[in-house]
Image (cartoon, rainbow, N blue to C red; front, top):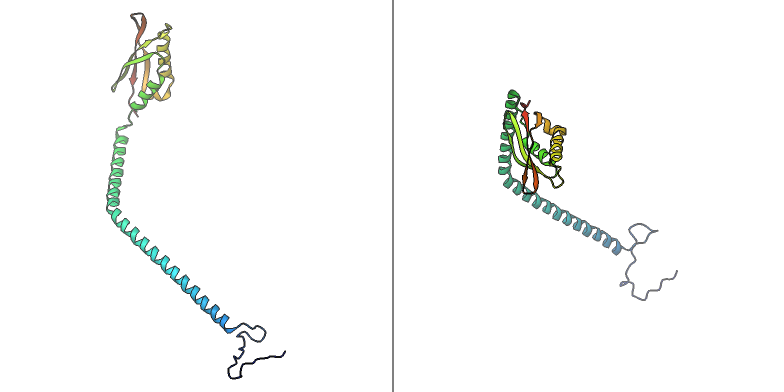
Length: 197
C-alpha cells in the first residue's frame, strides 16, 4: 500500500500503535475517552450512593425523634397494661375463690326480645338473686292472643342460653280483658334463678 502524505515530515503526525497490539487498532483518544467515561460513571454512582446514604440517615434521624416523642406515652401505656393484667389476675382469683361466674343478663334480655311473638308486649322484666319475673300483655286482631303468649313461653323454654342459671320457667295465669273492642291477655312468667357456678 502506497502512503502519500504531502505534509513535511517534521509536521507529520505519527501514527500511533494501538494499546492492544498489532491486530487491534483502537486509537488512543478512544481508549482515553472510555477510561474517562468509566471514571465519570463511577463518580456518578458514588454521588448517587452518597445521596441515598444521606436520605437514609435523615429518615433514621426523623424516626428516632418520633420514637423519642412517643416513648413517654408508650411507657405510660405499658404501665397501664401491666396494672390491668394484675387487676384481671386478682379478679380471676377472687372469682375462682367465690365461684363467681356472673349471669349474663344482657344476653337473657336479648333472648327475650328475640323470642317475642307478634302482638306480645312486655310491661316489666324484674330479676333478683332468687327469681326472674316477666309481665306483659298480648293483643291480637285474630283472637289468638292466648296462643301468642304460649308461643312466647315455649320459645324461651327451648332456648338453652336463656335457660342457663334459670330453672322452672312457668307461665302463670293469663287474665283476659277488653279495651274497647280489642281483647287483651295479661300474663306473667316466673323462673327461679340458680347460683352461677
